[in-house]
Length: 376
Image (cartoon, rainbow, N blue to C red; front, side, top):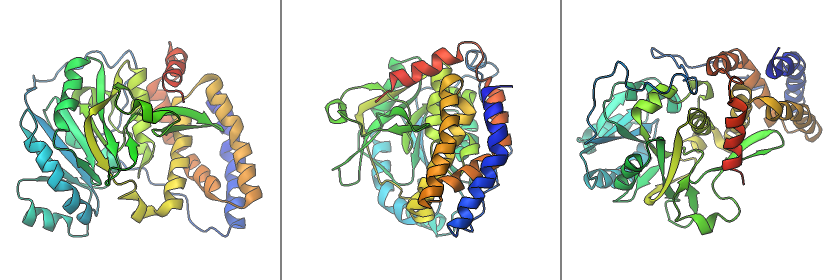
């Protein structure tokens, strides 16, 4: 039995019981979310080194002389009104034709009415709410080589598109390119030069790391980019796109970046391209700070169980009882609830892990190279 199997076999019973006790002691009645979003396009990850080479097999040739901006939206009426003008200006200044489409996840706040009335040149694709994984089905039906993926709380600088497109000309191994990103007022750096560390057993991605200011203007590799990035559409789909296992969100961008690295592809930080992001513009109102923290913890657990192997996974599993004991001692139920919710998805996690063939071949070498390259 694998390290994950041995570790989680015990955790699956013992820690579920302990976590529920912690919830009861804290007076928490919220049920663990059981729903895993499905769909007509199944999530199937690429097996690094095996499935990712013959990208164009069975595909018709596509044109490289145009691009597309897709904006993910769920009840973001006010955000769209604030952000669309800058996006349309950036689209107009693109060096190649650049359409703009809103991918709407079932909004009920009048977003679609506003788009039809005020933004007639903006396309709309409607579908069920799958979080970032909603992009997967839309990209499967597009034919552009490079597509920009934005949250609805992102603005673009007028010249943002061209540098991102150039990154794919310069780097054959590019899965995604990420801009230099700031808060809406331009005062605080938001990313997307992402570094990674493991803290108390959980993997964390961060952009504002020690010494980050000195490197803001320097092109580099990046581990992940959440709210705004350009992707090589064919590589993205060959990799499996965003994993719906992380729904409604958090950490799925790091999961994508890690799988890209393991497949031999890279993410590039392109500071010549500039974007602006209102952090938690959608998630904050929907889940609150505590809910966002819980989702981040839950999905950090899922990330480790799905992707890690060897001593890094063993260390992660060893930290779980320590974290849970701390939650019990401090009567803070956030981690306990996150653990219950992650364990509820364990069957899907194991299936994804098997599909990735975690641990086979040079998995450990590439895994540790990822953490060395993005250490902070």
